[in-house]
Amino acid sequence: QVQLQESGPGLVKPSQTLSLTCTVSGGSITTNYYYWSWIRQPPGKGLEWMGAIAYSGSTYYSPSLKSRTSISRDTSKNQFTLQLSSVTPEDTAVYYCAMATMTWALDAWGQGTLVTVSS
Image 1 (cartoon, one colour):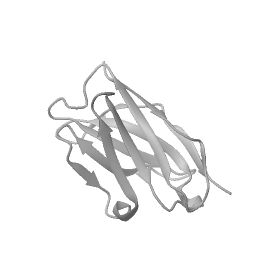
Image 2: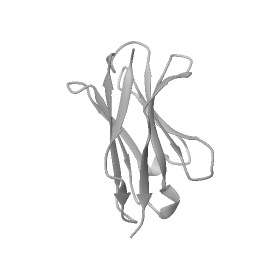
Image 3: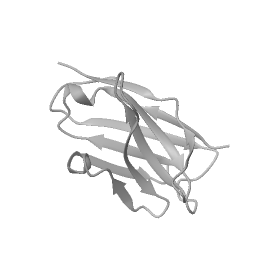
Image 4: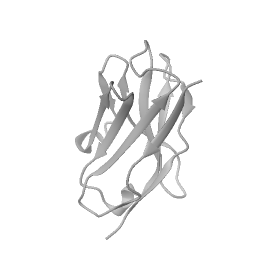
C-alpha cells in the first residue's frame, strides 16, 4: 500500500518561497500511470488542487497558481517537491500530497502539514 508523508517548514515569511517535500513509500513515483499531486486547504475553506507531476515527469498546474508554483521530483529518493513563491498570508493552509490514478482519482493521501505564512 502506497503511503505519502509531507515534510517542510511550518512557518514561512511573506514574500518568501514555501517548499514542501512528499516522501513516497510502498510504490514508485515512476510507476505508470500515476500522478503525484499537491492539494491545499486554507482554514475554513475547501480543497484546492495546486498541481501534479506525472510518472513521466510531466507537470500540470492550476491556472490560478501556475505563475508561482513549481513541482519537481527526485526519483532516487522517491520524493516530489512543491515550491510556491511570493507567498502571502492567504497561502496559509494545510498542504497535502496525494497519489492520483490515470483518471485523476485521488487514491492515497498524506496526513497533511499546516503551513502558516506570517512575519
